[in-house]
Amino acid sequence: GNSVTQMEGPVTLSEEAFLTINCTYTATGYPSLFWYVQYPGEGLQLLLKATKADDKGSNKGFEATYRKETTSFHLEKGSVQVSDSAVYFCALSQSGGSYIPTFGRGTSLIVHP
Amino acid sequence: GAVVSQHPSRVICKSGTSVKIECRSLDFQATTMFWYRQFPKQSLMLMATSNEGSKATYEQGVEKDKFLINHASLTLSTLTVTSAHPEDSSFYICSARSIERNYGYTFGSGTRLTVV
Image 1 (cartoon, rainbow over the protein chains, first blue to last red):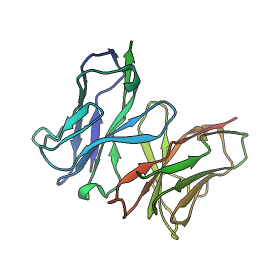
Image 2 (image 1 turned 180 degrees about the vertical axis):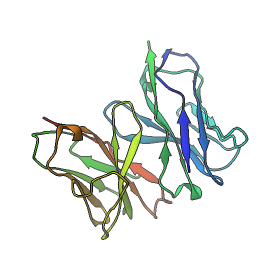
Image 3 (image 1 turned 30 degrees about the horizontal axis):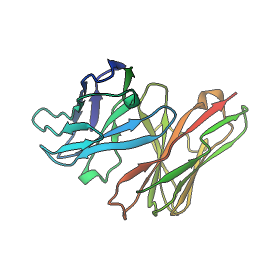
Image 4 (image 1 turned 135 degrees about the vertical axis):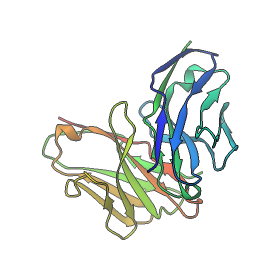
């Protein structure tokens, strides 16, 4: 079956530090990959996505590259801000993204001033 | 963009009472809606999938008589937690999918339920 594995958090960084949150997946075929962000007390928001190998998704300074050879979709940002503090979920979906997503456990990011 | 409104955002109820949570798609028709439960520091657990006008499909281990789901229209789905107990306290999130929106998923802002 499908599964998503994320690095355990929390990840604690100082403002302007470099961020990497690791995500690897197991799936049949060629799933679409997503990163969602959940701010405190809110629902999930789609942050970025990639639908095929070597695609790079990017949004708000975050980016992630679909690596089929390593089955990974690591999230990166060059310089984090306090406002980036949230929980980040990696997810995959089959059939071009039309199937219900399978989520990872989420990684909490805490950014200190 | 696509917006899903979920209400209420927070609710506190007494044990034994029922609570209804609403999920509305504001600017699109949601052919399918999903209900999730999120435990502290854990991922989202899919509870059930509902298609407009049909009975909901529940995931294994989810009590359908306790978590009643109604999807009476293309813009509204409701989750009713019946005879609530403290262990039902959780964060519930709905998600809507639309053919118009290329099958994209849009999430509601969630409901924090506390049963006392």
